[in-house]
Length: 252
Ligand SMILES: [Zn+2]
Image (cartoon, rainbow, N blue to C red; front, side):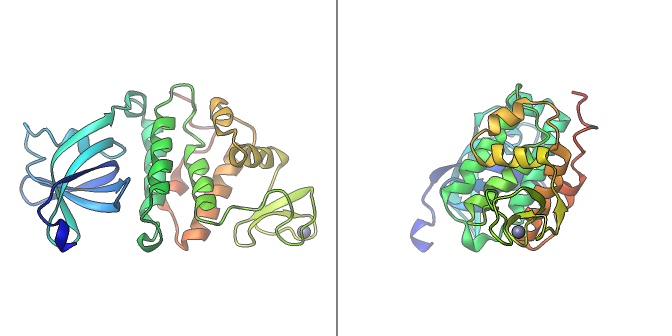
């Protein structure tokens, strides 16, 4: 890192969260395209006339100029929105879904993921949450499932994860590795509606699923995807557990 000290460079990033530092500064936690997850000091960003403040709001998609600071901290003097995401910003339900994703991302151990894949997934999450035709309810669950696949733990959906039988399937267990037949069943009970959502999301029809306001099996899918993500990370996700069920959120 000594060779880059002092040199300014730019990177694209999703803002995960930020917190106050000192009298007038803020530290933002970013997931960047080229440098993975980093902490960035934005000097003076809490002053009323600062141009940095709003661009560092959580769930923002930004281009940021960076200089290596002390230790693992970077310093920024310039942040610009790549997209303003107005539909996401205007909806409490969409913002809540974004926070559920951020909590999952924050729990990812840093040593295995410094590459661009997570950044690309996060950009898709933010643009999906900003798409007026998409219902945000299933976005965190879909992100968790896509992340598992990206991280080499894609759940088995075509055959029983216990015995290899071709179905039908009656349960899902993340620890066993996917769907389970009647003989092997354990974990979460699986309805045919939820199974069909799983297959569509992992098979390339996520956009079709998100266009449906209340797809049958959705609440069960949320539960199952969160449990799978928690199993993968080895820790509980508080915000994700509080994500409203599919029946109580359709009041935008
Ligand atoms: Zn089986």
